[in-house]
Amino acid sequence: TTQCGHSFCLGCFHDVCAQGTRRCPMCREAVGAISRYVAPNRVQAELVRQLTAAAEQPSAPLQLGELRETLRCPACKLVMGGAVSAPTGDSFCGGCFTHLARGDGAALAPYVPDERARRALVGIRSKLRVNVALQSAIEALFPAETR
Image (cartoon, rainbow, N blue to C red; front, side, top):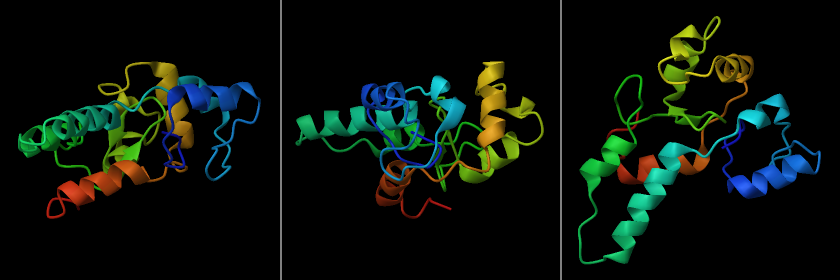
């Protein structure tokens, strides 16, 4: 997921960056130096894994408890609201990320251990947008819990 909130297959994103464009293929917003820290969005990948497993066994009920755990913000432990996904692969509530990324970003350390990645996230904190795909899934699955 790029800072503008669009998600792509990692291979395709790296291909775009290798061409020298360093722009989001959807909205053309510059992704800048953070592209070297781009990692698969762990929450989104786990959500897809769980939904795919449920689709492959239509007779089994969707495990909403497991999905809820997947979609909890690691900081506040609530189902993410205004979900932002950092290019490092981490996802948070928009408000939690804004709070954690203040100053030098030291509060991000428990969630983003790499210091260079943290500094890069602090540098783009005002540019991160809601992860459209992830937030849409959260609102569809847990409409009463989104804030």
